[in-house]
Amino acid sequence: MSDPHSPRPKYRRILLKVSGEGFSEPGETALAPERVRALADQLRALHGEGVEVACVIGGGNILRGAAASENGIRRATADYMGMLATVINGLALSDSLESHGVQTRVMSAVDVHKVCEPFIRRRAMRHMEKGRVVVLVGGLGTPYFTTDTAAAQRALELECDALFKATQVDGVYDRDPKAHPDAVRFPELTFQEALQRRLQVMDQTAFALCSENDVPVVVLAQDLPDGLLRAAHGEPVGTVIHNG
Ligand code: UDP
Image (cartoon, rainbow, N blue to C red; front, top):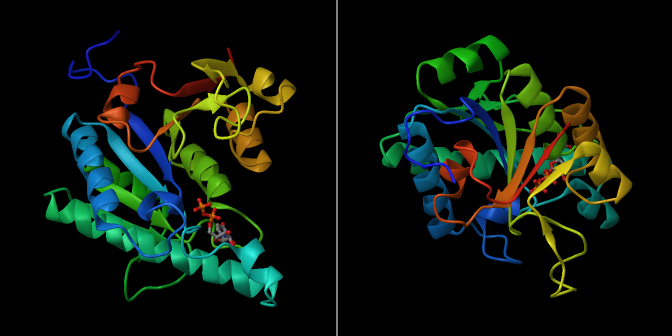
């Protein structure tokens, strides 16, 4: 097992995807300040080790386009509402990080210039090089996509060494661990194995982008103490999916 506090993390630049669920208590819409603070704490530790981080923020705790469109809102409008939901979560994370002494920049793919910068690739890279945590909101700025796909795309465009997907489950299992207590967690998988076993790692577009472009994906529990730091050092937390 590697020392989580050794000076050389395995991954120097990480794209972290945090879904909206990570900002609220289970089944709730309201922001849960304790959860946001705990996430900010983990990011501060990662940042303290010199790891460059960009976070793609989800909005599913507030609104998901597909679900909202079932209630009569046009899908494209519902998706824009979902993108705006990610802005709310992202601002909460940025605020919490800043109050922990970590500099951030919130960058949005939808134009909300009163509250954050537009996403510009080179500027985002520069922020990370200067030690700022970049909080990416608004997904890709396009309806009919998810923030998983945005995370994979930004991981590529920002030349990240890995995509960390922080979830409410501590990795990828052979079956749904909530329905099957005897489900087995995989410490490691190839993209091919995940595909053959039809394991739900992330949406298909995101999965294909990571697999085709050789970006390892680390699925881990958001609430695992020091989880992000340990994963950055290559410790076997969660499930690592790679090309073998
Ligand atoms: N969304 C979108 N385009 C994007 C990213 C997100 O239209 O590029 C919308 C979509 O409606 C989605 C919602 O924003 O349901 C919130 O994102 P997501 O469901 O991915 O959040 P998460 O499940 O990670 O909380």
